[in-house]
Length: 293
Ligand code: SF4
Ligand code: SF4
Image (cartoon, rainbow, N blue to C red; front, side):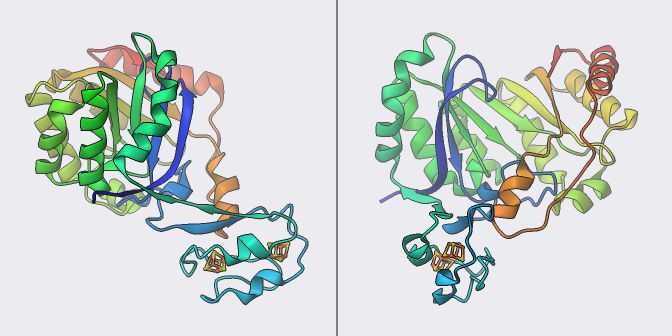
């Protein structure tokens, strides 16, 4: 049976597409963006997360059969296999598991009670992590929601085989497509992935008539320069499918979750409001479509 790994299902989302939506967060991503604000969705396995502020350093979790825990509550997330033993043993309730294997029908059952809140504009957003890293599961879910008449948005980094996107097209109303770093060498350095496939898939979806919102994280020191904004503006003229650009200014909320996973912080400067306004103004002058944030 088709099953997928989900990190969370969040109702009443207003930042993941039009209207009020329920976001289904897939677990696992082929990219390794250092500014990722959902680091728990990057790992493709079930694992523990530890609130170090609650930990009493009792050492009970050190019995971990995978040797993923230290005697002071430390966690090596890549060794953890999500057995749940330390969750059960922790007297401080400092540990929880992240990740759940679900069938499309189980996800549908979780989402359907939210349907009255979708009204005419809202719906479901498949997000992550990267939904297309579990392409069969994403397709099965999109079909389920489509059959129910629920609007489907797919948030994607674009790094999956073209055939997988072709299969999604009939069941996806809106693509929320990431455009992170325009320079290919810098893209490889900051995300660990070659951008060629991402660019080709974007072009393919546009040629197929998909509706696309380009989602552009703005990370000071990485892509906050005019050359990147010029490239985004050029894309909006080249690709008719792009109907809007969303600028997503960096925020540091991912660091709290990184620390719960036992990972080191990844800090970038948080941009001031006037800097974000300036990016929006510059890009608006270069773009065919509205630029929002
Ligand atoms: S859930 Fe806890 S005990 Fe189980 S493998 Fe992970 S860290 Fe170890
Ligand atoms: S069992 Fe809980 S309180 Fe004890 S060291 Fe582990 S995380 Fe901390």
